[in-house]
Structure formats: C-alpha cells, structure tokens
Length: 135
Image (cartoon, rainbow, N blue to C red; front, side, top):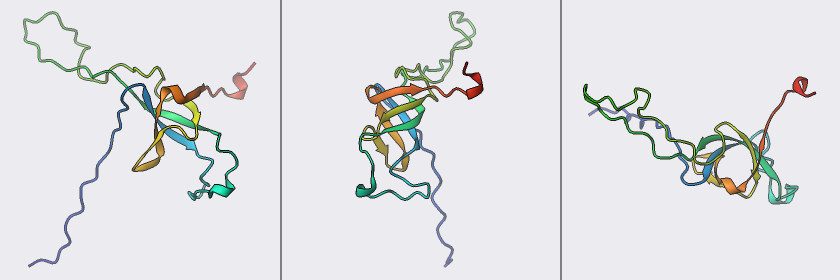
C-alpha cells in the first residue's frame, strides 16, 4: 500500500459572462481596502456614497455565432462567419474605465475585485487623456 498523497485537483479558470444589461467590472482601487489588502472598519470609512473606479472586463453579449459545416456546393456562406463571441448588448465598450456607486453591483465569490454591475448603475465612462495631449 502506497502512502503517496492524492494528486491535487486540477486548476480551473472561470469565465464570467454577464447576462442582460450587465457588465463585469474589476475594481481598480477600493477606498475600503488598504494597499496591504486589509479592509477598513465601519468607523474609519469616510463616506458611504463614494464612487468606485473600475475597468469593464466582460460585457453581456448576444448568443455566440455557431460554426456550421457547409458542403462544397453551399455558396451562400461567408468565410468570415464562424464560431465566436456575439455582439455587445450592454452598450458599454469592453476595457472602458467606469465609475459606479460603491454599494452597487454584486461581488464575485472567488474574487473580491470583480463586480457584476447593471449598466443603469454605471455613473460615467472615464477617458484617460495624457496631459501632453490636452490643449
């Protein structure tokens, strides 16, 4: 009988696909958390009505296109149409920096920096412009 430990479970990667008019946002800086990762207690918080800055890392999409197998006689298909992501239905560009209310959105259980936010709770899209480009 071998005393080898059981093999570790396989690592998984999770992909969160928002449904409906929602986006997945990674909080860039949370004012309730220190740089060390510690959360501030309730008494030390300055203002509960603060906005958080986040980056949209995934958006709600239509159903993805399905790659169909066409025979050699089928001329009514386009070679560019294949399996892939559907169209963005959230109206918010992927990668956009956004402001949203601190109390809005649902935290993802395995990553505290991710929030699923309804687009109606997004306050603004933030454009970052280098100072040398401002006239």
